[in-house]
Every structure is written in C-alpha cells, then in structure tokens.
Amino acid sequence: MNASACRIGIDLGGTKIEGIALDASGAEVVRQRIDTEAHGGPQHILARIAGLYAALVYAIDDAPHTLGIGTPGAVSPKTGLMKNSNTVCLNGLPLTSLLESALHHPVRLENDANCFALAEALQGAGVGHGLVFGVILGTGCGGGIVIDGKLRAGPQALAGEWGHMVIDPSGDACFCGAHGCVETFISGGGLEHRFRTLLDRRGAATNDPRRQWSASLVHQGFQAGDADCIEIMGEYFARFGQAVANLIAVLDPDIIVLGGGLSHIDRLYTRGIAEVEKRMFSDELTTPIVRNQLGDSAGVVGAALIGI
Ligand SMILES: [Zn+2]
Image 1: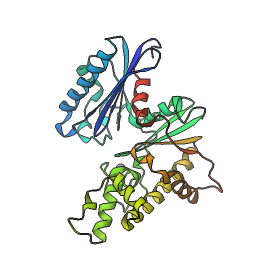
Image 2: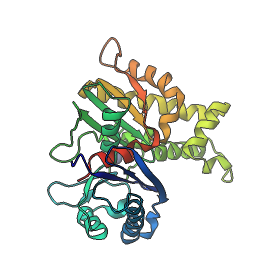
Image 3: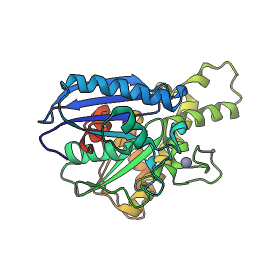
C-alpha cells in the first residue's frame, strides 16, 4: 500500500455498487452509489463499474491511486475464478482480470464481509480488539476475520464464511447447493422467504400484501404486533443465537461487529444476545456483540484500505 497515494474503493453488491475516493490523508473526497442491474449480466455489470470508477478518478483529478474492490464470494486461489458469489452470473469468471481490463488499473478483489471486518477493526467498533469477527446481515450473510489488524483469508479464501454453515439440514435450499445454511435463516433474503413460507402454512390469502414484504417491513410488522411477524422474528433471533454461539465456540473472538441492513434491528442487541447466551458452551457470554460504527460505508472503506 502506497501511503502517499489516493485510494479508491468499490463495493460491488447484488443490488448496489458503491464507490469512494479518499485523498492521500485518508479523507473522503467523494462517494457515489449506483444500481448494479445484475439482471443485465456480467458485461453490463463491468460497464456499470467502469462508469463509476471513471467518476471517482475524475473526482481526484486523475491522481495516482490504489484500487480495491469488495464483493460477495471470493476468487479461488487455485483457479483464479470467482466462486460463491450470490450474484451468481459472476461465478466461474476470471473477475479480477476482467476488471483490470475494463478499468485499466491493477485490482485487488476481496470478499465484501472481509472488507467490512477490516474497516471496523482498523477504524470502527473493533479498534483495540485482537480478533474481530465482522458479520454482514444483508441480502446474504457474510463474515470476516481480522486478527491483530490483518485479514485472515485462508488457503481456500473461505475464512469467515459462516453464512453457509448448515444449522438445519432439513431447512430451505440455499443458492450454494446446501439446505438450512445460516444465510437461509438470518439474511434479509432468508427472512423474507421464511416469512412467505409461514404465510403459506397459515393459509394467508394469495393477495395478502404481506407476501411482498421486505425484511425491513417484516421487522416493522414485528414492532407493530403482527402475530406472524412476531413468530418469524422469534425464529430469527433463535437462529441468530445458534449461529453466533457456534462461531464463538470455534473462534472465541474478542468482539463481534454486526453490519448490513438487518444490523439495525435493535433487539438483536438484547434478545438476540440472550439467544446466543442460551446456546453457549460456557456458563457466561462475555463477547461484546455490537453495532458497526462506520455505518453503510464500512464495506467501501475496507475496499479502499486493501487496494493495490
Ligand atoms: Zn448456503
């Protein structure tokens, strides 16, 4: 990392692409967010990224810069091909080289939850903690491990991928091919699907508007006292408790930092933590489980920090 250079970071998500440019002192010059339009396919996504990147480069007046890109999934160290992305059209592609050709700049591609964890470890809620586990509860469910300020990627680029640990083999099908992954229960997409399944079981009318509810509307329904939302959020907190207790049993992190849209659910920090405590292989839970401090920008800041 060149300490005197500007930094550009891009967070490539399934629905949004966000970019940030930092000046040589680390101050934000500009931040922009556009739609991914993933339905347009890989070439269209690359063109979207190239347009955003050009605007960021313009904002720093063409100054020399590093470039890092965060995205779900990982580049296989063995094949160089993208794997495990929930933007499934990108899987199997040599995404790093495609990006380098499109942007005419070296690119370091890193898992988005790893970027989030690194940013929170170095600049956010994890500062001063030895092992930081960063969790993303968004469209999907990701995780990243930072040990003493350094990302742990692992020889297969899998470290922290707790979203695809199976916690109920009889659970719903996941895009990864397994059933009952953590992601199928506690991601935004998982919560929405579980809620629709519950409405089916309850015999809700086909035109029940709740069938279209997003995760955030399900949460609002829970707060407003909707009985079906209360039931599904009860399951949500219990599954969150199981998934986090499992990860504590393996890693015993110094702190767990939550990010992504669902990290705004206040009761994760009371009832969610109580559900973890019930399932701990220990007589007490001392691990701090906290909100992120960098907000929605953590992922893109992390991408800027890992750039080359
Ligand atoms: Zn899965």
